[in-house]
Image (tube, rainbow, N blue to C red; front, side):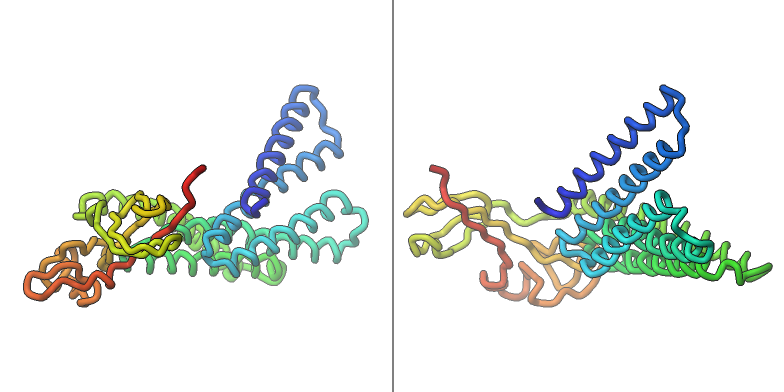
Length: 294
């Protein structure tokens, strides 16, 4: 079972338990401390499962993998410390209780912040300025986590203006982080809508290749096809070069992008009115072969 599937089932089970316990408590009017602890446990389990699910998706897509593992480890340790606070509070003295609370707060904010960061790392942004904006959002999230952690550990030492400035700074970077996390997927969606209006590569380009099963050379079109000799099935996809602004450069006439005016390197031009077209070897293709079904 993959990590993503494991956390998906963990989220489903924990949310179901939390919902059933909540309904039972409201229906029968139970307010015992034990039930409150059980509800707190299932609620925390649900939250951390959702956060870890976000990070697992990013790990499977190989996006910020090291940071996502940091977030998952932080979530796991935070959950254990939360269980200690909820179920074993009597075992902790005053100083130990404060130390555990500060640690669990720091680990929780790290885990919860890295979840959305993993999601916004997934979209493939072609234009430069959305990629820069995403890095700015990463920075805002990092500053927000640092300020919150500082507040957890040194709140008792802050008074007056220093405390007010710190709280205002936390609010500012929280807003900037939240807005950025919302805007990045919107920009990615707008990028997809814009690309639909650009000229795209033909879906049936002809390529010459050698069959990996029977070694026969032949001409096969992009998309789905079969070997003319042995019947091996192919799926050939062609990825055409793009300008930094996202414009597709198929059949480009001239040296500059008609969308943003950037000078396009020769290796990225597919067609040019004044110079010969690039050789077929310059076409980047991704071909995969699968056995025919019996």
